[in-house]
Image 1 (cartoon, rainbow, N blue to C red):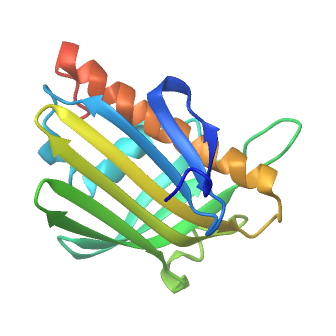
Image 2 (cartoon, rainbow, N blue to C red):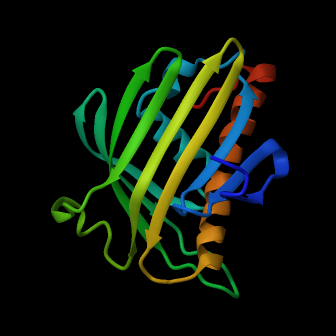
Amino acid sequence: MSSLENKIICSKKDMILSLNNDNKNYKLNFNTISSNIDLQKYTNFNIYKLLFQLNKDIIESIEIIDSISENEANILIIFKEMGDIIKIPKNYIYVTVKKKYINNQILFESINNNNIQNIKNKIANCNKTINNFSILKITKDNDILNFDYEFKFNITFHQSNFIDNIIALLIKKVFYKIKVFIENSINNNNDLQ
C-alpha cells in the first residue's frame, strides 16, 4: 500500500491510524512490550473480556453468544451512546470471529452475522453497525507485540466521513487501553481476573 493510498488520521501515542483512500478500510498499527504478561490468557476469546473490562466508558457489553468451537464464536458488542453536541447513538456489532494461529501470529477475523434471532431482545433500541471487514493480527517477536488491525464498518444511522473518523478514533482509544494494560504489566504483573 503506497503512502498516496493512505491518509493518516491520527499518529498520537505511537499508534498510527490511517485510512486507505482506495478501499476505505481503516488500519491501526502499534507495537508494545509484553515481557511480563501471560499472553496465552488473551490470545483466545478472553481478549474480548479484556476489551470490555478496559473500556466500560465506551462499551456497554461484550457477550459471547455462541462458542462454535475453540477457534470460532459469535460475539455481540454493544456500544454506549456517546457525545454531548454530536450524538452517536447506542449501536451494536454482531460478528462471527474466527481465530487462527500462523507461526508467531494470531489472527482474529470477523465477519458480520445477520442471524439476530437469538439476540433481538439484547439489541432493542440499538442501531446496527455492519462489520464489512475486520482482521486483527497480533505478532509476537521476542518481547515485542505488534498489533495490526484493519477494519471497515458501515454505520447505518449516518452517511458521513466525519462520523466514520470519530468511530475509528474510538476504536483507537479502545486499543490504546490494551496497549497501556500490557505495558503496565511489565511493572506490576498486571492481570485482570
